[in-house]
Image (tube, rainbow, N blue to C red):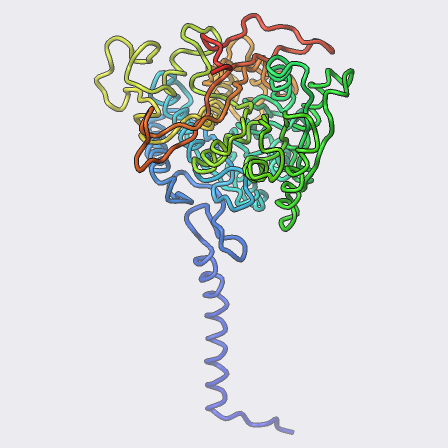
Length: 540
């Protein structure tokens, strides 16, 4: 029996539909891929279309980064041309959150300073006073707000190990669980890692991992030493962020309590620990307001704040606006995340009448002239002024403008360097460069594993970092770090008088440098030289 007859018109419709479906099957993925692409190596993620991934400087992520990204791209193009002539090179990535949101501790201003420091290290290594081989190609990697897309970005980086000679990832962002997981994945894949501002004490002992920042244990020791000396006999209240993700706060609180109570032998020195939870978006501000209101019920005026900078400003505002005990003068000591505050947040924190001290990661004024703790050539880049003592071009300057070193103030005029972020990023990238060149001089293949191996043998060939000469313990922590103790100070922008339109600004003022000695068992061995500023500024 014959089947049903199909009209010619129906057959044509079916054929057209089949062609349309075939075209859509090809076109839709291509269109989606085009829509999801921000630039080469950078894609959109999430409902907000956040751009994450890896760039050679071709993509900026934020308009604030345009200038430094152009410089990075230009330097990478120089490396590409030299490699065509046979010059060896390696790729080193600087990875952090480049699209920070409201909950991130590192704002755009801070990230910009990090990128500036990373570029400075690349330029010094390729064409200025530290020029050598292999040359350095610098990649910039964004893990997204809250590092939520770290797996994608780390996967992109691992895929560049062979084709683009990626040997190390630096920066790595603040001390969070996601960033720790990113470092662990890179370590398992044989990529060397150098943390710039990651201070949580429990992030350690990973293959090929080192940090250029002091640990929270180091910062706690420095803060406790300072307070015992300056606030002798006074007891302290600790305020701690209990958010599970915030490794920085949890380790900082425990480390400070242990150091200030002298290993628990004098527990009475810490009156109490008050807690808030920054992961509770609807409650943490109320919790801090309640804690600040309770300060009047205690006789103790010194508070140690173990939390992020953005939470510190809320706590200070609440404490400044207390309805009781307004005649009390409180001192708040905290950790290095204060350096991530924006200029406006710094000003807000400084003008509330509360004395704010914090342990920083680095500061351009922390080294006195003639100090043996830092390379004069390195610190020259971070100070104001023209060529002078310690300049890499002292004497007859190079006639080649491309080879003439420039200070950060000349490269990026108008940008502050007091937060130390540029210094730490510079030191992280320079450490990776140092490891790559040590491996090259040893005649072994230069890859992530050999570069990471070099980190453990730098005692006799230390990295000339801006935060001091760098060498590392077996667990990846830096040896004998010098830690600046800083105070927020309000001053007029125009100098002693009122600034423009009567505006005042706030800036960190160096009061002391504390040198953290090495541990020998349960004791600390004093360093051979404790490098401090030329004068005691604490009483100013």
